[in-house]
Picture 1 (cartoon, rainbow, N blue to C red):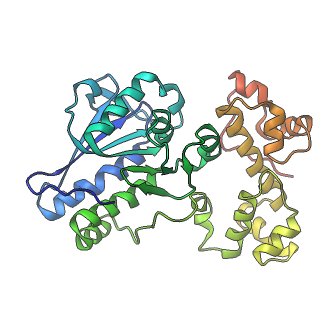
Picture 2 (picture 1 turned 90 degrees about the horizontal axis):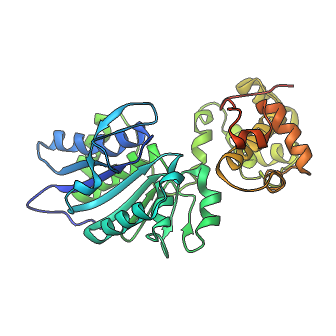
Picture 3 (picture 1 turned 135 degrees about the vertical axis):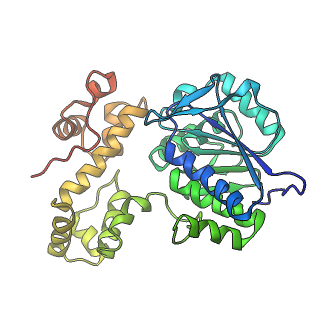
Length: 332
């Protein structure tokens, strides 16, 4: 990371919170720093919370956080971080881009967590850099910003730019910051303080986290899910997935029924339709284009499957007339 470590003052971090930011992402960003100060009995890190133009900002769960308006903040920081959630697009304004460009001039490092990587890219601050974003936005991010080297890694450090996929990646990134600025011992003490078993490296596909809860149960099941996740546009036959994961076809069926009370075919369909729902909500792609990207032979076939699964048609969902549940499962 190669951060400068001040000898006469704490490392200063400014954190800009956009409305509906993730509480978990913020906590994972600042709590390790607070713990490091407490454990070391020194003021090693000083973090200041900013908002766009108000004295407070509300998180996605409705918790109000006191902040300093961006225009009133000191133009002094070693690290400037912006945290945004899935509503980031409405804040991609020329005004915010100008603020971020100004921050890049006075801060040693500029970082974007969760959906905020999009805003850094929109401001031109990731041109020629390797970067990541929350895994649900990766495809659109790569298409929108051809000048950015998009990565699926959990977090990316490229020179004076940092991007992180989300909440747990922020925790690992901050542990790394503590380790690089004040040593392994303090980083380990912070991990023990939070009963955090192991810092995870930046490398590795973010989407692997989706399957993580099943690792302890059946490792081969994780492989099967990974094959499904990586083959959305051109779906594999269930027998092929079973073979790649080390199952027989019947063994894969039993594993899914044990863990999900669901057949692998229905689980695979759920993954494809969930991806389609994100594209409906977050892009201007046509229904036909979304159908193709999610492995359906036609727009009509896709629309029927989508409507049955989510109890609303793609066009109705896009118009906002009907809100579908994020956890709808259909079983055969």
